[in-house]
Length: 509
Image (cartoon, rainbow, N blue to C red; front, side, top):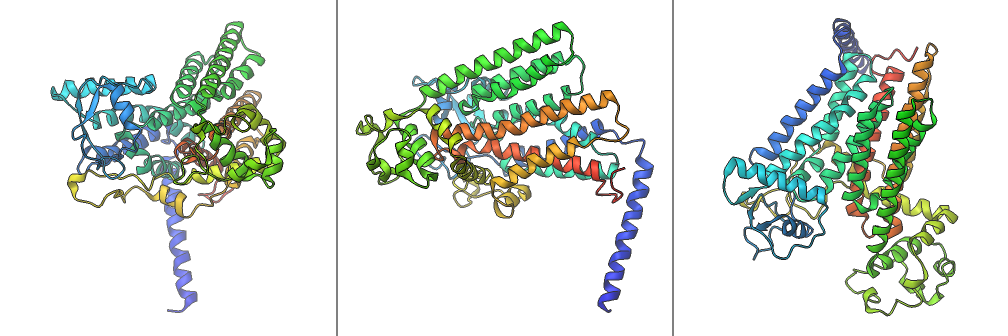
């Protein structure tokens, strides 16, 4: 067969496939229901969760050292506390329910509540003194699917044909059903709850942008933003960012009761944000102060001596540039007191904020470093399997990793991608139809405002991490940004399908 004949056959096959797709869309044109397809997507997600977390071999996340304080605060204990295999290498599924006298009190109350609910659920089913962390994974899975449903429904409502909906639904399941997300459900990390709160916030914003009297969704938004700030100290400015939504609704022509409620919510969020910033300031240990300067300001400064001079710090401290407080052979121990006078006492977070505003080049450089970390969603140091399986330490689950592998191996790891996604979302959602009525224009304007707030939040949260700790905690804290970009990708993809009619290839009218 000649090359021309081969390509002719391929073209004919594509034409036949396209004809069948059009016939399918024609048959299903009156049956396309975004809510029903969203339920189907959530059902597929539920099956994936059951297969990986509740059926052997069980998948979870190993202890990175932070679980110990959580267990002490919630009355749990490792079955074999004398071994260290549960740290990093292997996932531990079963724990002993035993009150700990050395509770740290550092665990967020929301995480404690989730774990205690899971313990009660496990005890109700088994009636023994052991806790299976899969009970916690079950609680997270239910909350996760509830948070995902309005997001799925919104994205599916933005396309017009069943074939487009199936594509959006399939891609959504691949992204939000990735094992890099699901494995964390079977752990004592705060990250699953942070993700659930964030998805709930996104769903509330996308939904109430169309409502005339959205009291319930506004209340849900208020609660979820406060919960997110309590779970993650670096989300302290989330209250200020999301208060923009309430201020916007206050400035619109609304009934007096709704405007009063919006003012109350906005003021409450700003107040909680201010309290969060105070708490974040109190967490500024010498180690965090050191890293905020050496792995933040000095890390990206073209002239470290000049950068130090802006804070009134002597040039001799430039030798600390790019060093970590926790490196194996530190130049100086931050907690030794040798840096208290002349270095640590010469700056504060507000000074670092203003420094980055004065030096946008340094800001862009450190932000690029932070965004790159968001593409690595599966920690190399953590295993997914129990030791009893006999697999090597830190073994990883190979299935349902298409999206996380793409992000870590093939996606362009640069802050420019974040900027492109943000601009793309605002552009495609901002395009107006010729026949759009006044009400539709108002809904679109509200939706654009909500999307802008969602986009801004990711950048503000990541910059807060940078200002208060440099890049030393980026690998752990960039997880929320990673999920944030996943949402941005799906919003952009679904709206592009809707606007440009890519699958059908007919273009926008």
